Length: 162
Image 1 (cartoon, rainbow, N blue to C red):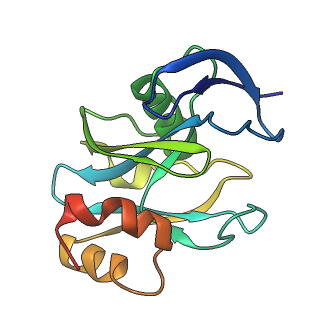
Image 2 (cartoon, rainbow, N blue to C red; image 1 turned 135 degrees about the horizontal axis):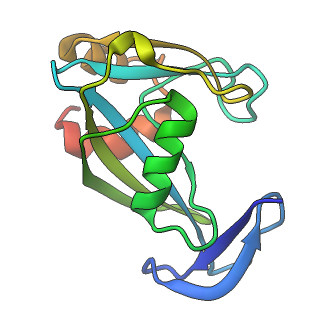
């Protein structure tokens, strides 16, 4: 059972717990950290979602990420999720976005890594592939119908594209 902290609409902890899979009460939100991963050489990481995932199975995604567990800050969740989903660590984390949807608060980070690019590890049940793209290719990908639409929208302002 995965337990999350509940948050109010302004991103403050609401002193309530939420349980993954149970309905989130109206007016409460759970926190999700997502990371746009860029190598020090300028390439961006795409991860392919497992075909068994509920949303966008098999799609390439521009971010790694997931829900913050009870007691975690958004940054702590970002670091944990990055390691779990990619096997990578970051040398810097810069917050690049904040968005509230119906029951989720997304905090987006740009993560810079200096890893060996072949050292990406896949997480069973989460990811089944990966690729690194040069910035031009990455921006083309995000502007295409192949990109997950909500991710594209969350990254749009940071990446300055239409």
